[in-house]
Length: 83
Image (tube, rainbow, N blue to C red; front, side, top):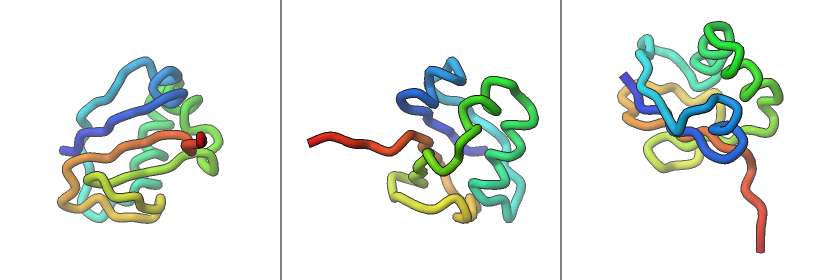
């Protein structure tokens, strides 16, 4: 089980701040996102342009190919800008 936390427009599109989901051994972030997008229209809309998503596993920035084995938290958010 992993806690997913959503931020900004991703949170708005899905309609929740976060959720806990089961993750199969050997699953990557990309695999999990594919699964969630197939299960829900809201997730599909939120994850439509994956080039505009950023990820952090246990508060460390990672790529979509990162495996989720033993991870406790996955944060998904759009790129952050500002000055």
